[in-house]
Amino acid sequence: MTIKQILEEAISILKENNIEEPILKSKLLLAFVLKKEKEYLLINDNKELLAKKEKEYREVINRLINGEPLQYIIGKQEFMGLEFEVNKNVLIPRADTEILVEEVIELIGNKELKVLDLCTGSGAIAVSLAKKLKNIKATASDISLNALKTAKKNAILNDVNVIFKQSDLFENIEETFDIIVSNPPYIETDVIKTLNKDVQNEPFIALDGGKDGLDIYRKIINEAYKYLNENGTLALEIGYNQKEQVINLLRESDNYTDIYSKKDLSGNDRIVVCKKK
Figure (cartoon, helix red, strand yellow):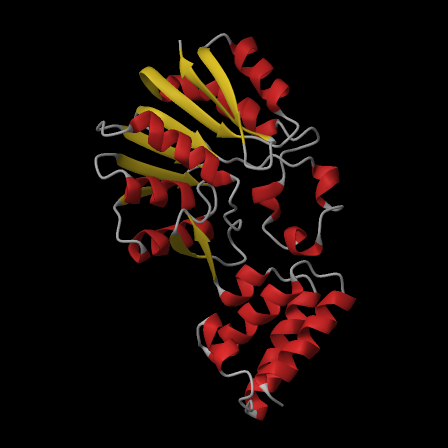
């Protein structure tokens, strides 16, 4: 079977199974199996595949149909123009989170500041900040040891220095910072089971924000000001419908000021930023 023929077969199967972006995903998976760039497929579309590679390709197509995220199958995801290793222990970095990183980059500029990334997961936020801002001292924490192992690999992969700590939020944090940034779990527990199969296969602990999706925000907001330096900043990613609730939590705590939000490229409220009073 040629590359063109097996791609046509795969695209058809993915469409039948209601997989989003079937053309792109079929090509990415074949390029992964062949250990080639995607462009290779177009130039060599009449090339015959080895039986072994055909079998391997059909296996990864089945994994995708059964709900395994594409990024876990190929083991990587791009974020902020950088490559990150991803696996079943970490949430897959998404373009929406780039809004949070870009805002923090703008806030820091060339200043020499200390930054803490809570719930770091793959390390995407902390590693990206350390790569783009050479003057910062970045610390990243997560409750999951397996997530931290992946985050450490990503720091090495992208040639940056980040201090990693295992911590349930602020439990093992012993210093203060100029900026605390976090993309915490914020999906309502009952909503998770209604999401696409591939999202449901990401770590539950990285998705689950409790009954109303706000459990982790409450904990962060109740504690973060104690770990912020004077005029320190707290920057949070939020769910598309959580802006008012998170802002109300910040106001109720009476420890924060200069609260504002920004939208993502789809027009959804995506981040809330404030300063310590």
